[in-house]
Image (cartoon, rainbow, N blue to C red):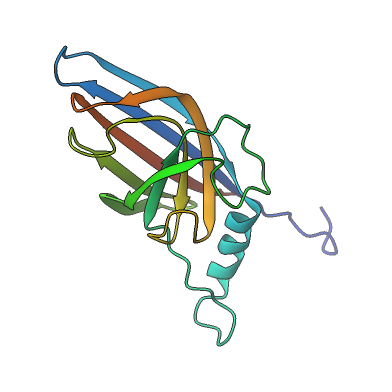
Length: 165
């Protein structure tokens, strides 16, 4: 590499989702791990974070809610909503950690035995708003269906990993 060439730096965003289901009646436990995509809105949010504090530029987006629904259409980068949202709640865990060129942000929603009953969930989304059908969708995932009944506890854990080189 000569003086005129520049090294190409990259920032990689790797979203991973863990879906855990506990049946309090039978004691059964299942889990699903999924990689998902960051939506167009999510990519713009990361760009906006670089401008945080610059007057008139930052949107102030912070993922605060996880929504669940029964949609089955594959997630695509242009998604702005869930396909068939039926439940949304504030994240129960929100934390960040990192060292060097790596940082992870974790967002978790826990549904206890009395939450969200009577629905079958197949999709989830990470949002910045408490309003069903509203707010900015940062990320969306499809998963194997979970029938939510009074004996089921459900946890959706989103890890957004940022890695630089």
